[in-house]
Length: 333
Image (tube, rainbow, N blue to C red; front, side, top):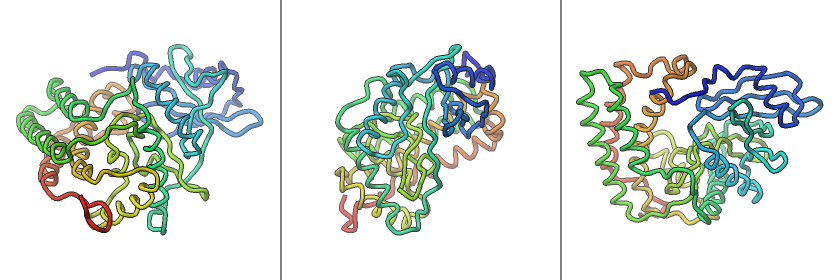
């Protein structure tokens, strides 16, 4: 399962501070690890200035071209006054290397979780996602993945089964259930028909959205990809169906001020949720050589974990055959 050839354990405090100093940024020695598993992210004190945030990229996940493509996309958004946190450019560069670790530097942006029960908050969020998509639709990523059944469903499920991760007594059951689930995803795509694919945030949930008195700002575009617009909208929804419908209507009020939503994409919501469940298990498995994952996700790869995954996929199989949410008060789809 190992993918990491340069262990993060080599990323010592001294190395981190030396890396920052190597690009001409004078740190004051203060260092605070922030919550991140995919990469390693630190708040670093700067002499006579505000702290910065440094992201050290997981080795072998993205090539340089993919990282720079993400940086370019976020800069386009920031230049258009969309509140997306772009990396700092130093002498025309946003990606740096120190002792084989690649890293980027960001201005520290504080914030809190949005208060979704306040009037206008979801509509405000929807406006900014609509603006992100209006620019995302102008060009394509060349070096970043496309979210589809193969990349987020077929390939991850093959990995899980080929690696022999599941308990023997559950492997046959999981194999059958995941095949049935992927058939359900294909039906979702068939019902949606030919939908547009555009550049997305890719992991647009409330944890990657910080709120200030000036409104929202979006962080962590590390999972930017090509995909359908609904991918950046459905993860904003939570609760029972009636609650999600209300939330979606509010988001859409702001979203369609800047980008037209294709209501047929609503057929994809449960299919995309199913792909995320499959992909998440493979994401954990592929990083299981990282000690931080073993400490943080102690429940992974246990009998109980896989039993729950089988149950969740069975629930998704049923949900994918139900009627989707509707677009707008009229309920047109």
